[in-house]
Image (tube, rainbow, N blue to C red; front, top):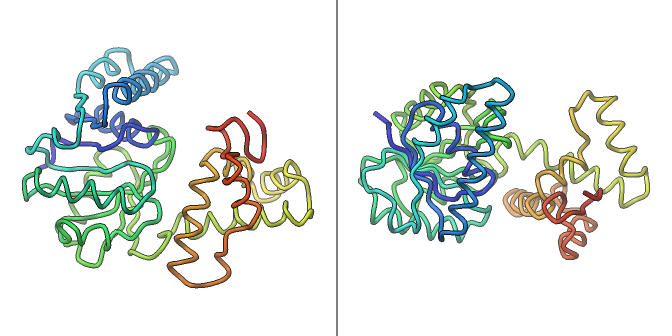
Length: 281
């Protein structure tokens, strides 16, 4: 039975994951590398809960109870060994994730399930450094408290028991789980990122202006936001990283990252988080 979750990383995805589990009554250890980062993460959780309370999605009492369910932890080595589920939610870098799981393998009890919130990196390769049968991908969507989907990615050695436990848990926290096998980009990013990449190609080639590309996709395809706006929201560096995983993983030229995307990342134009991407913020 899972009742204690440790979320590694308190960024946008990590603090959102912690918020959702806490709202559903789970004890959550939110793990960061230093005091400044954990304070920032807790501030984001508080803001999430206050926003939901003001909208009437939850009550003020529920918001306070959820906040009290979250314990701040500084340092991966201090992650409680008693945790039932570890969810890694750090930046999309294979080497960084591998180091984290190797360290956790020596600390956490052997019955604990390890999950990665990776959006593109091989779950099989990550699981091979620790506990393959108890390793799985849980790809949450941003913003986590609002988006219903979780891609549940089975690694080559993920056991049926591990899969069922995480599938049922996803339903218990009000999400809609979809089973996906371990291939580069899974489903969401294998379909989404090439579309974004093609929109960047269209912009680079002067087919249309950024605003018009987005308007065509919004009004013509009924997308809630255009692909270039979405790229800015995701972060152009993240988009590039995922395209490179697809390009390397499939060895297929159709996944080649657009040169304009690479140039913008090199220039530090990363989207909303840097104040400028395809649009200015």
